[in-house]
Image 1 (spheres, one colour):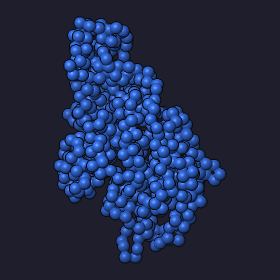
Image 2 (image 1 turned 135 degrees about the vertical axis):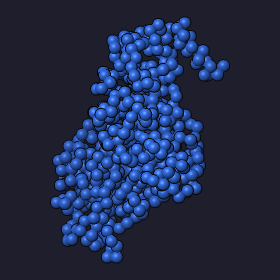
Image 3 (image 1 turned 90 degrees about the vertical axis):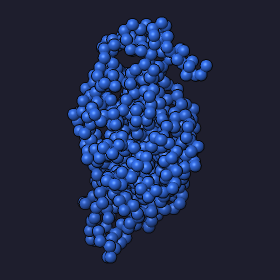
Image 4 (image 1 turned 45 degrees about the vertical axis):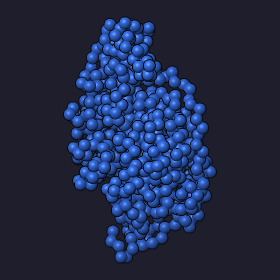
Length: 565
């Protein structure tokens, strides 16, 4: 008898009511994800599987929910766990308490740092977690051929993971020029799986058609309703994103209707632990969408069945016979506060033993740059990276510096520096607008996607001191304000902390307090971490210098006499 046959042999009698279920949850308002409606009934569970809905079931144990609302476990359609700054088990414990039972994660952060070993670590770390962590293989390591970090993963290396437990598809294909140009290596990667996530910020028209034709059928980079509608009409699944800095729900949810909700899900993409700890995970997305006018039932559908169906996960996403008993109890559909979460029929609070997985050591092998290495010199007309509030795209600005020195805190023009963490000796320097610091500097070893050390500040001395602190710590986030130094060590690959979520949150609070006293914006480290991501428009900074994300090439900071701005 096969395992499936044995399972059915065990479950069918309980489903028919001839044997008792393990537990029956009585007197519940059960969300029907198929019709986006509510049903007052009982829910029977056996061996972690829903065996039936109805009032005639008997259970070895029973629990009266007194009319509480029951919804399927929430699903994050696209996330980078490393961006939480938590190791996978601690991340899972935190988001499970907020109603999440499945995340679709792309481990390309740690893969860029540690390659195959990074993916192996993330797969091992999913064991025993109170959330089903499913992985999409990182398709762009490095993000572009020029942005080499600690590894390079070709189709041959990725193919070793195809079919492994916990691997369900190919992660976001950020190499849009490679797709459109028919790059052989890119096409070989696309052939590895029939489930392929896209990454196509601002792509439109015939180029969008070609990108979709190549097999990329989802996108989480939409920042306007028009962009999302075009991609939806061309057949893409839309993951509406709401992260620490990428806030797109307000702009996009007005397009969602009962007719297209099956193609729309939520993504948190990149969220620091403090946001998850205080405001929540996918539950936060649901509340935000409802506050923007979306009906609660459509928001819940997006967070459950829509995401499950996009990834072919027919064993979850709805409360129906034969599906996993992943669900949560909420206070009400409109306020959507999670009171309790169940994973395979058990309360997530029962998961207390972290897996025994060795953390990956730091790969910080660089030395602090010299003042000469971060010096800027050139003509007065300069390209400047402009932060865009609430987004990870940047503006391409032009400033006439005249005789002004950088930093120029009056005009909010600061130096930004990227130092290669892998010992290659490369240092890139540019100018950024939008951080608003009046004193001090910050630096971090989290810098998408190569994860070199990135820093910005109001003086060369402070910038170099912040970089030195990160190097000495072996990876982390640091704020330097005179003699005051605030640090969050990231002991796992220089990306994640092994500390509990509450302690990481406390250290992030200390960093936030320090950067506020320096005059900075909210969440400066998250904005800083994306300044080197060359697959997002418009201007970026790398260890080579300034990069034009639209023209897709390195450019000088200062315009020459023969080049027009």
